[in-house]
Image (tube, rainbow, N blue to C red; front, side, top):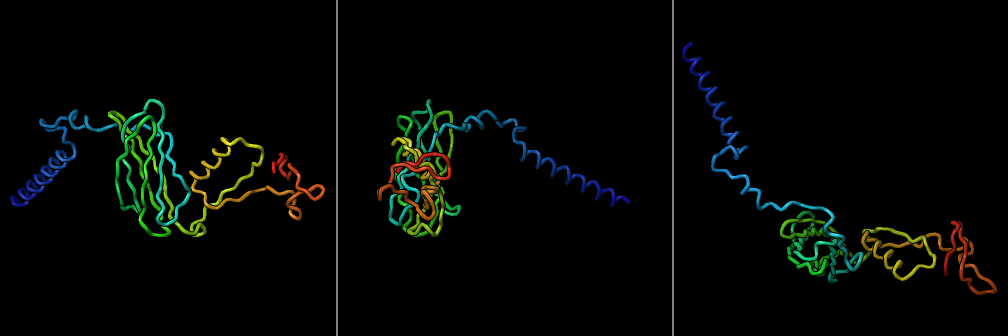
Length: 213
């Protein structure tokens, strides 16, 4: 009977000791030597919408091409540092730092000389008190049909050069590598409308808006 009580006391003592160890490990602030302010003073909080946009100069690249990046920051964040990390299938390939000047940073990267590979690029902006991050992808493929990403154009009105640049930049940011000119023709059996054997300047397709030739 006595040995049974002793065993119970030993068991309860072990449980109590384990609870104490878990409590000290999980909640170090209970220690009189732990300074929580000192621990958190080095953590820079993350703020969104500091990086305005990130872009590449192409939607896809051939082997041996150099990728050119541009990052633009919002107002009030004209200086700082970008930390760029390049990944492939979760593995870090390379890291670099780029300085931000006048709300913009430009840099280049040479991907590995392998065909039909995709890369994940993480861009982190850090200043003295704030940080933000965005990502972008890089496709290295000699044949666009290996990983097709279709897009289309359907507005053929008289656009300004700035508007055309905006459309193409948006398609490029989506990494569109196969482009369809949708609803551009006059009729299926007569794609190009003519008058006196000459193409006319404007046509009205099924969708009721004029198309500029």
